[in-house]
Length: 584
Figure (spheres, rainbow, N blue to C red):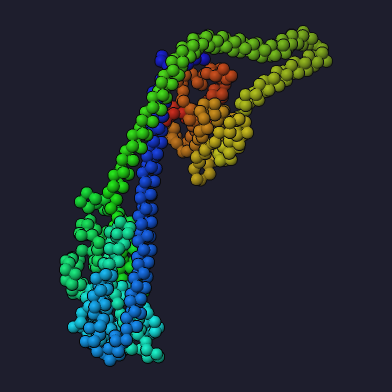
């Protein structure tokens, strides 16, 4: 047996562990930094969502508050008997003289922009904000709701000039009769500016173009002395804003993203803006547009960036410290390992000498076994020779001759029985070739192997789809396959699977048709200097081996006019293949 020589240099512990440890540490620190980043983003998005919710709630509260204020103004107006008389008579001049100063005060102090006196037939009698326009029918939703319900109604409505106004309409009743309707309103700019001052966010009011015409929209801009681009926001048009200038990055595509419910972050002139969109409904319940919430998060982004940098630097310093500590610890381990390696090197020399002694003992045991076999055969053979000589001398005595011949026959039978037991032990007592299905044979052998092998290694079987029947000796081939499986199990490292394959293959030398039954393990392979001796009887590289397994496999293959080969695999492991001729 040839022993393995020790490596010249011990394995470098630092080189083996420091790289993977650095990768794992970098992954952990990177995951920590990424988690911090995602947490900051989550906090920022949640803050915008909370701010948008606050805008929505405050917007509704202001609508209700201003509607209540306007209703109080109308109730106070309805107590004025002079105004009541003029309204009942349809006297526009008297109404303007009496109610005009009240409207101017409301416009100055409370930014009221609209005030109407409308008859019970919904025909306008007087617009205090535009006295020269009257006589038209006002069919707005709030007007119809006040007429149908007989009580005040309010809500956002689009005006004929492309304005979005909070309107409140209340019926003026005198007894059971309705004198007409009072309408008061304020444009949405007032509301969004108050929300901006309260929550420190900018707002942009967008209205769906389906409810507007370009002409109406431009008339509204002219009335407010503003300019705008009808095509800028795609399906929407801007009606009001709290910014002096809408960010250039807020395009139609961004508006569509906001409309789908997503928050969007854009850059504008060095500022970071976070955008969200709230739905906007009119008094009739129609979804007429949206309220874009614009928050300047430049300072928050700067703080966030410096936080990420600080966390990254802290992680890098912590990682470098841990890596350095691990490096110096491994350096001590490596020095200890080198000393241990030198000691193992010395022990291995002693072990080599011990292996040589074991080899001598094996040869001695072989000699003892051969001597025992010779002794078992020599004793009866000596008796046979002696009795044959006696029978020759007493040939004239038939009775005595028959007794001697009987003894000779008994001794021969003893020798035959001894040899038969020896042949049974080696499983090559006879050769009986019969047509044999290979699938069941392989399955039976694998089952026996699994019951014998202690590690219970997995076995993979690759067979042709069509059943294969070969003319072989079932017992011998099963014994040879079992030996190959045991060798593969002893060579396999870990729990890798052993592969059994049966495939059609021609004989390389003469091209004769045949089949190859192979067993492939996932061990370390066979050294080149050992490969040439593996089929030599009694040669083994294991201390507990007999050196007879592979010679028996080769003998079985030769009995079938086949052969056996062994080859190391490129990826590691060894493949033993028995080739059998395909005979009828």
